Length: 237
Image (cartoon, rainbow, N blue to C red; front, side, top):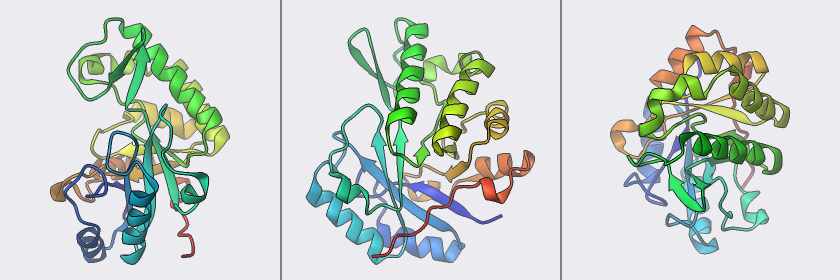
């Protein structure tokens, strides 16, 4: 199986990793690596100049060029700049419930869990229907206080809606090495729905680089064929 990691963050957003070092390590490990820094109002790359510097740095070191935007937030660069990317990843990091934005990375339990899940589904389906993205990042991830409900939340009905929408729009579903999502049952349903899969570590630290054991395990265990693995084409520079 081809070694791939399309979800690596660097100093251009919220990680201490340097692009040149990632490139050296990718060559040494024989990994097809993609830098996919956050493109959002919550990180460093929220204006054209920072984006241009990011593009130049990644291109200089020969890695695949991606970016991860926050689903539901305005992308802070124009379409011409987005067109420079080899791939665009969208991740749901927060949803609005009862007029309050609730971020996923925290320990506060939503007041109304069902309303939170409904808002999550609606936002994801709206994104798949309207946005021009290539990869849906860490899909089915739930905030820690809701993890105990994972299989109840991501049942056959919800997964059916989600994966059908992704397949119809040609959006790859990331299997996340960091967050260990989607679960095996949910990946089986995605496979049956005809989606393609992206492999990513979501690395923010050196020790996390190319940490894609879980995706590789799922691909091998479920016999996901190579043609169903998303690999972006490098754009000419």
